[in-house]
Length: 370
Image 1 (cartoon, one colour):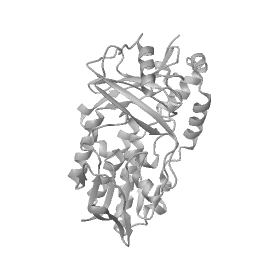
Image 2: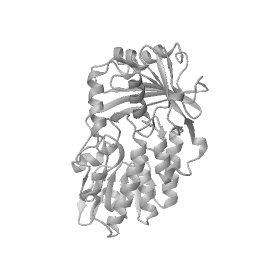
Image 3: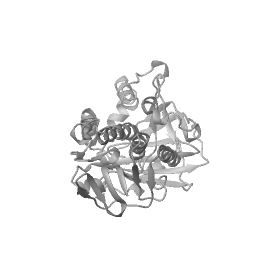
Image 4: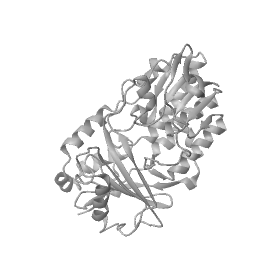
């Protein structure tokens, strides 16, 4: 079988890329090792307003798959907190498994073929592309297969070396007292290098954390036990069994190098396209997945150069966020968060981080618990 493009990984990046390619008439195949794209997820699934505004693919996202969250309540380690909002800004909590299944349907409707329970092992270069084992041949190959990308390994492309370890529990039939806030908790012992969170998702409450990946630290299970104990005075989940658990590595070192070679490129988590500071990756995965699909289609249709020659230069550099990640990794202090939580400096800095430079702290919503 001959394909114009084979994409490894039915991820946010992989499915958006497949949709773009198929809509432009290219024969597109997506290889997915899982039997269901919604299985064994590693993401909290929050979509930022920027993605909704900028990505037409999300225009018809079913309303029952998302729930709007209008702001953030940020807690210092001693539980003092501030409420942050930005005019017109919001987040969307999602039923992430069904959002991915919906994106898969969009790709199939566009004409892409999705092959489940199929792993990518190797590919042999031929004159006009690659021979991909029993699958056939393809003119182009895209790796959208996560931070441990097999495509990257086979072709000697860059691979992420710095990670956060994430763990999240889901609790059904729970209701938060303040469901319109993303509750974020700073604690250097439980979540070094990042934070913990509680949010009211779609039909359940999500409780999780991400922490600097270091085998010498306590295990993620031990950290979750400590988190649940700490949260008990305001959110007590200790006597309830989670209905689902998500876990996985989150690349936080920025975009890898190189991200492409002749007729092969990486997108999404495989390319390290995750914010080193916020660990958000869905927006960039969708945005650059779609753009990669258009760039590859132009090349294969003789309208542009191989994207490996220039397109990947448009990938975000995250220079400032990588610097802030370094500072947070090395100088995170619970004492400073306790002291500074109610200051305007902390409020404004947090507002810029959470609202992606587009939000300005709204004085009318300025609240703090002292």
